[in-house]
Image (cartoon, rainbow, N blue to C red; front, side, top):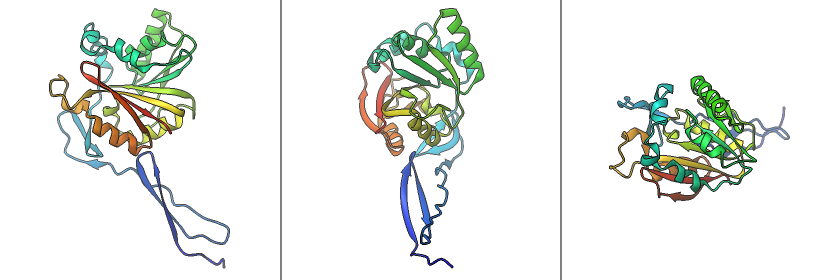
Length: 248
């Protein structure tokens, strides 16, 4: 029989969840126990929520592919100033950016023009959205937008393969936020950035349903718990704030 040393424990913070590893250490072998799952909480679903809560926030329902008309509306520039938001990203010409929840590609195609030596990986979990993206790419003659099918809990991108990630009014709909941020952290290169565009919940004059808005405080709580460093908030946009986080 192997002589065992005293019971040891250590706590590791990964992807916003605290995983507790306990083991008894033989002379030369240790056997970690698998990490615990994120502590999501259930609640009675709100009219625009799914009844699943993370860090005090009920996750909103998803706007599916029937909402393409809303994404492509002609007055979006006037309401949200997306051209200004894109300028605030300050991307290098050879950057590889993942547009997470790309939808119709409204941002993907506009950003791609700014990346003559780079590309946009347009990630979505709805095949209908990716079909729309492929049709638009052919119509516009855009070669550096790459449609990519993700999953509800994983962006499905190789480790250290992207310089930056953009989420435009999408993160609040992710029903597995902990897992998604963990997969994004893996996909980002060191010092890679996440650009988070969300409607400002602090401003009651922003005409968006409450579950589809986020405060800076809530976003920081969730992203910092996932291991990202808060860089800045660029609040110059009409309805949204642009929150920037960095992978250490």
